[in-house]
Length: 300
Image (tube, rainbow, N blue to C red; front, side):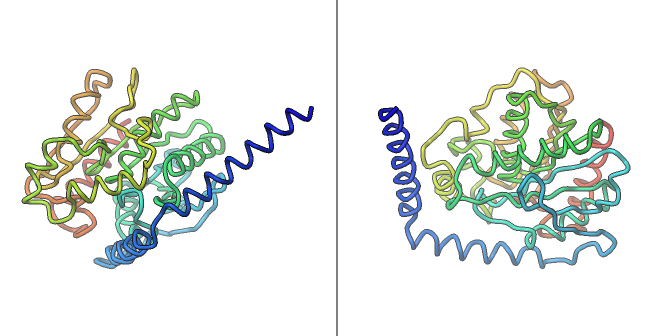
């Protein structure tokens, strides 16, 4: 009994020591830099106004702060989960309220935006665990409903992780995925990280690499969507601009998943930058992307 208690107490001490070490290992300069990036990212949500006809309601789902867009449309028995981008460290409801409100109006379905915990304060697997918790709760609360997922940039990677984790947890996989400029390769080794850099004013290989380390400091392969293996996968639509360093992330994932899911679809948008819907929701390319997402998701 004493030996068991001793081992138990030692385990707690090790865990506490590790937690303190993790917190202390984030340099003040890094946190200050992230703070500046987060402040800038907030301003992206003010580029254009939100769709005034869409209601936005804060909610706590499975202990995770979330927001309902057009919750009154749940009677259609199809709910969309939105997983936002921001290199796993940036982004909030303030950054995405406007864009998602227009998406919800276009698709005419309710959207649940998940305010997941961000790196570096909360590295992998915090965001993946929270996404799965919300997904599980929605599956339990709305049995028989279709649940689809939209993700942009890092949120696209989280959407792929959610599929993997739902299968591992014996839950039904999402009905469909729509991924906008998804960040799939945390190793940042695809050719477009170099070949498209001259036309991408938003992202760079170094920025992505640095944030990948903040999100996954232990180099855990399970954190990297490009390392996940699938025998089954839901229908997935990948939308990507030609002028972004993440161009090959979409192409490579499409080439990998197409033999697994025949309804996988890839569409490139000429001349478009990373997640172009953020900069102008009314542009021809943005309207086309929203129409593509609506057509794809509502048909599954």
